[in-house]
Length: 122
Image (cartoon, rainbow, N blue to C red; front, side, top):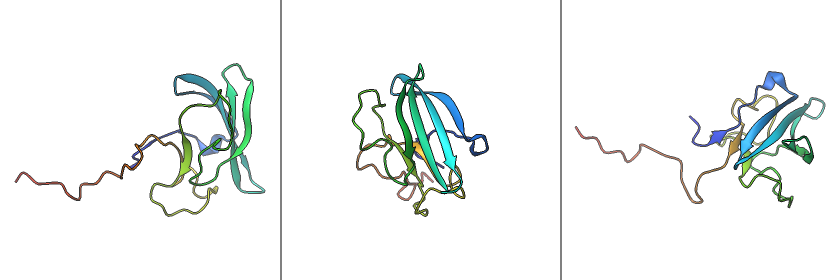
């Protein structure tokens, strides 16, 4: 079970463009797949269709648009992650199966919830 929110994407519908609300603003979000390279990329547009960033490659554990300064970008982190920690790259074999586009909204230093120290009342 995921501990972060993720962006639901139907892999069979790629290439796909949809509206998404992020950090109080509406964007057009496009997901693309290059079969010859086995890579996924994202295009982000303002709600009116003006491009903000095109062709941002999905790199496991790397924040989207992390090296771009643009006030139009959402103020939250979207990261391709495998919460189980098993995957090494984003591929067609694992995208939307074990690797998802998570909204990384956990507090810094927060750990994965666990019932390990749960106390029984019986």
